[in-house]
Structure formats: C-alpha cells, structure tokens
Length: 122
Picture 1 (cartoon, one colour):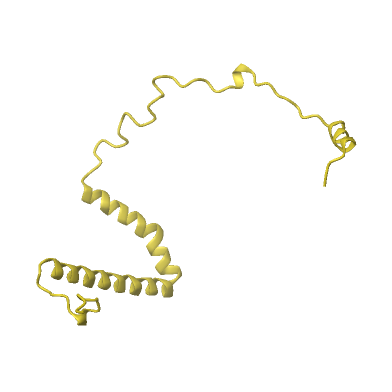
Picture 2: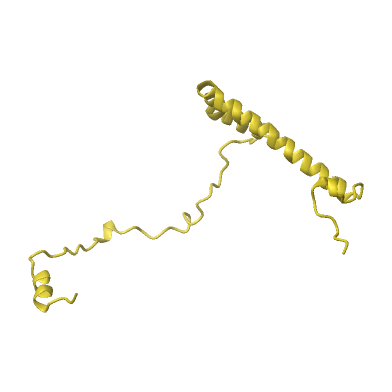
C-alpha cells in the first residue's frame, strides 16, 4: 500500500500543530554542587550500630513480626506446608554435605549403591 501525495499533504495540513515549549532557566535543574556529589551519609544514623549478632536478632524480630506471625495466624495450613518443606530441604542439604565430606576425606569410595556412576570397566 503506497501513500498518495495528497494524503500526506492532508495529514500535514490538518490544522493541529505540536506545541514547542521552551524551558525557562528557572525550570532547568541546577548543576550539582561539589558538596552534593557524594550522596552517601557522612554521619551515622545511630551512634552505636551494635554487634553483628544484635543486628541479626533485630532483623529476625522484624521479619518474624511482619511476615512469619501473620502467615501463621492467617494461613496455618500454608505455614505447616512451608515448615515441612523447609525441614525436608534442610535434611537433603545435610545429607548432601555429609556425602561430600565423606568423599573429600577419602572415607568413602564410589560404589554403585550410592546412585552415582562409578568408573566404567570395559
């Protein structure tokens, strides 16, 4: 489909113009000052942030208060399923680590019983 020249002229002359707005100098953002170049804080929020253990405890308390407690209260079945899934995942990871440690220390030779392919005898 080719455009006819008269159609193109009609579109240009339909009476609607796109307004061009010039920004006044006051509307333009000012250049950043040298003092504003560093956006990080120069002063700590608290005097003593505490030990890593205290910070971890505060984080857990916040997560428990805002996520875990409402989940257990509002959706006890889902919380139970998530607990069981977490327990099974932890057991699988524990077994994986124990098996890897046993192989790394040389205490366990590869055998067909462990489900892995051993060296192939041809």
